Image (cartoon, rainbow, N blue to C red):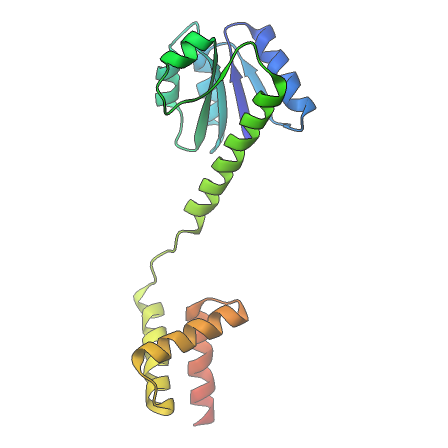
Length: 182
């Protein structure tokens, strides 16, 4: 995942980039304006923006609002600035303690990865054709094996999980096997 570091002084952004790279975070980009950070963020679908409180072209809260949906945000600032920030914003106080900073970045990236995978795995809606395969397989199992509708559905579901294939493919195999016997 891309990490974008946006601080008013480019030297500070480069120092933080160097810390991140030395701890295994390879894709870190330093910027000194919020607009440059937004350009970098729009070139990717997800990542993390590490920002200072005051940027030359906008406030950090405006930057956070403008970020694409797949980006997380980490605020760097003094204890006063961090305490004044919204409680929903992850933050690290300056001066940085490298260990705490790296652990925070790692935690945010891990959470972002889990959220991304969870959203990616959301079950898609089956088409009418796919639903018909399952209904027909259920009906045949009910007729042939004298199962209830729930038992037939659970049979298809269990076979699907046992074989590591989706329910539609399992239903198609059941239909093929039963019709080939006839």
